[in-house]
Image 1 (cartoon, rainbow, N blue to C red):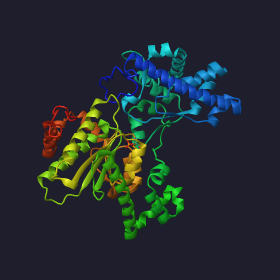
Image 2: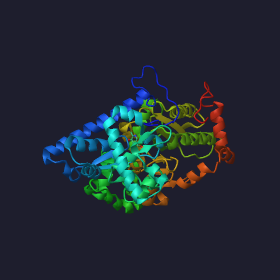
Image 3: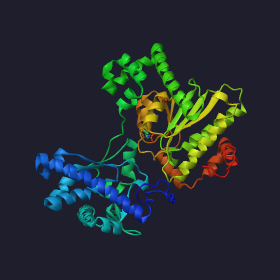
Image 4: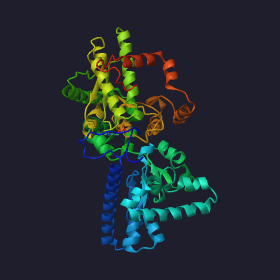
Length: 492
Ligand SMILES: *Cc1c(COP(=O)(O)O)cnc(C)c1O
């Protein structure tokens, strides 16, 4: 499988769709052509500019950095070799030094569907010269591995650029690794998992290749532009240098004990929440109380990100409030936003369930302002800039080992939301920086998830162990939230 197919299950598209599904031969061919087109255009432009200034490709590694942003442009390795060898008559070994010296590779996910591979016959038809070059790169690469680890046949086939199993395929992640002088993951956990999982054998033969560059966010957009109130308060408290030097935020620590500062911080948050409440009213015709806790999960809809878990918790809270409406419940607004990939059927069911639960909860007079559910449509950066400054609680609850880094976690933390999350992606490093008293960590570790996958234990056991979970699932399955189509649930 290649390209993005988040479900792994079959895709169907309407007859009107202008692009074919990527699993079809026509879709595969189109995808490869697009990737080659953009990669080649970028490299040709880069080489043209370099030659105009320096006149010689041998200085390329000293003057440019070509960063493969995920696996999709990995064909750049073969394309730059073609440009050097075929168009500029540079000998192979020198061309290889130029290519590897210029290129490095950022891996963005461990999900297998993002590590592309192309059928050899497709490559031979579409990019015959590149296929020859890849074979030659592979021959040199395997010679070097053979020389260093003689006789290890398993290792050779594992690190080969060609997958020899059912139908020969070119492994583009392997091509990116071999053609790069550095390979990086995007959080400490993710980089460590790269070494232990998808690139385990490569890490054994090239132990200095994989490095970590934990993702970051721009404070200009996610603080100064989107939250002028908080920015003003920070400048007032720490001086204008804080705008250019985020490490100066550490100087705020003593102000945690300053009641006046806390009041001003709360006033900024309140103003931001009023603005979001107005947007929710305008978009959803729903009134929410700005003094309630704004509990926020905004990100692409995906099973591993576990919006479903958050919805089930919402139902559990709804049931609990209804069972004991006289208790002093902390008022809460559950805020969701996010898009599903066009063909990701389960993700779309999760969106539907969130809307179904919202309709029932928001229309129930017994819960009143103690629980509201808002799913804002068309999640994008502009909407994120409205929600992030208004959040009290940041939901970062992916299954450990699945989220490479996350950046929503950082945006929301920067704007003063507390995080509830799992030990996944950059949450791990956020915990190290803020300390366990300032973050709510729960759930299995990556290792425990892995063990759980192998020990054959089943979800049914967890349902058995939690009567509350059982009741929630029963309510969803009974159709309480979807009276017209009780069978169509994301939990089934
Ligand atoms: C930051 C951001 C993301 C990434 O969010 P995660 O919580 O890290 O998955 C996705 N979409 C938009 C619009 C964003 O602003």
